[in-house]
Amino acid sequence: MEHFIGNIKHFVLPFFLVVSLSLTIILILNRILYQYRLPYKHRIIRKSEIFLTEITLSRPDKNTLKYKIAKFKSEIPIHKSWCKDMLIEDMIRMKSNLKGRTAKNILIIYKELNLNHYSASLIRDFRKYKKYKGIYHFQSLGYRPGISILKQYMLHPDKIIQSNANIAYLALSKGDWQAVDKLPVKASIITTIKVMDVLHTENIPIPPDIDLWIVSKNKAILKLAVMTMVYYNYRNKAAEIIKLLHHKHLGLKTDVIMAIRELYLDEAEQEMLELFYGETFKIKLEMLKTLAVIGSEKTIYFLKTEIFKQEVKDLKLQMVSSLNDLDPVGLDALGAQEADTQKMINHIRKLQL
Image 1 (cartoon, rainbow, N blue to C red):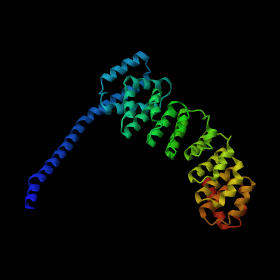
Image 2: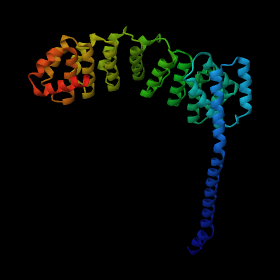
Image 3: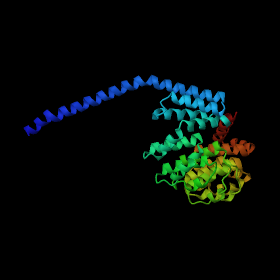
Image 4: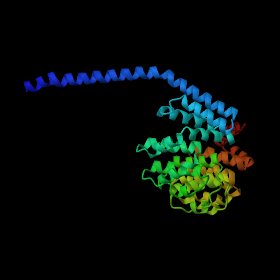
């Protein structure tokens, strides 16, 4: 035992001490080196901003543009990854505020600096975060030749990579909706939002298969179908939308109720009134908001009957608000009968001023 303890004192402890000191020195040197290089990086960043701004404002012809790009390339450490990342981020930021020929100049710079090959190498990298970054580059810069690479990842086993590749493909193809069919079955709300963002930014025409989406078994596709129909003000499948009020998924049901409100599907009124009592608190609130828009005499009668019975304050307040939209005179009569209802009426109308 004493021999073992002696070995620890003479060999193990000095070894760990040397390792600790070495790591400390390395960290300190890295920090010093980082601080030393920081002004240089800032100069390159500033040079990049000036160059891109100049190209944007001056709008040179093709030959002049290529000359300026070549000159700029010789003045920066383009072989460094940090420099490439910085340039691409600057281009993405500028392109988001540009249109027409000026925006095309950004793509010319991207290709002339061989940054498209860098983005492609990121997509092919085995590390996931690198793939995400490369896909993001292609989509954000609108690099359409990148479609051929993205196609290879549209059925990737990793669901996030698969989803990102499909959304980027949808954006770059300007509406090839086969990408939607390849979305993961358990696509998240974030994926759906990303698809809707593509619709807004790329001005993509209404998908030809939208009538098939609304009868899909995939909740993600159903959710996308409902949101897309609202975006395009598409009312041709009103019956199918209303049928989804019976769906078990609460998130989808909420979207359906909101879609009925946005599309003004007044034929859903009776169905909603019948389903109201069996729904959760949040669904009831959404239904009341929608009934305030599509409701008729049926809803007015329902609200006048329920307001005095309702014990949940938030639901009663929403009922009062909905009836105020549909029949303010009738609501005044109810307020005269009950002080609590009158307080809610005063509160709602004060907010509307």
